[in-house]
Length: 174
Image 1 (cartoon, rainbow, N blue to C red):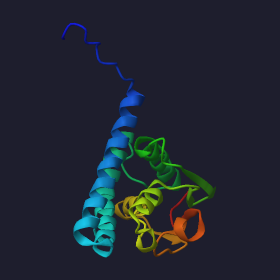
Image 2 (image 1 turned 45 degrees about the vertical axis):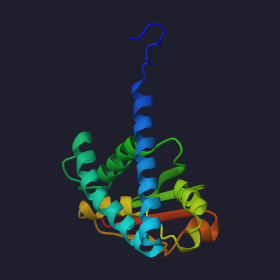
Image 3 (image 1 turned 90 degrees about the vertical axis):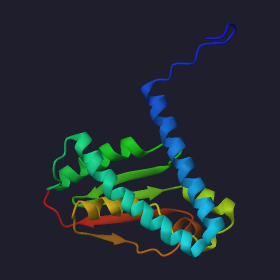
Image 4 (image 1 turned 135 degrees about the vertical axis):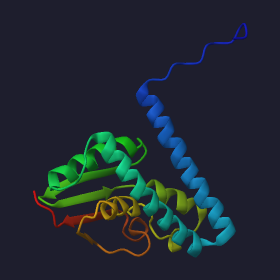
């Protein structure tokens, strides 16, 4: 260490995790921006949704293994996976809530959205197709779960209605 240099601050585990989440999301945003510049919004939307969904299929298997969940057979298993997984992936700036309003029902809700904010700054929000819900849907599909989702949205619900949510209803035992 050079004389006069202060030692690097030792980060807590929580600070490291938050920094990693922010860095990953910065990568995601910059990928979207570069793709937009090279390919236009239509191709970027398509690539973004496919990339998120395929990443989610790998991610959910890693998360399940880390949480000791061998197979999701019940809604209780799914709830443990969602809660544990969201704790791992959710950064502080991601303003969403997950609730379970009824047995077999999961609700994701946003009062504000980081993707909406970023894409709005790029000036293409009117043509953006939300990629956020590709992540949980990619999880559910990779787990082989049967579900329905409402509402069916093309575009960006936050842009159109000022808030955003999806409800997933699962055909799975309690």
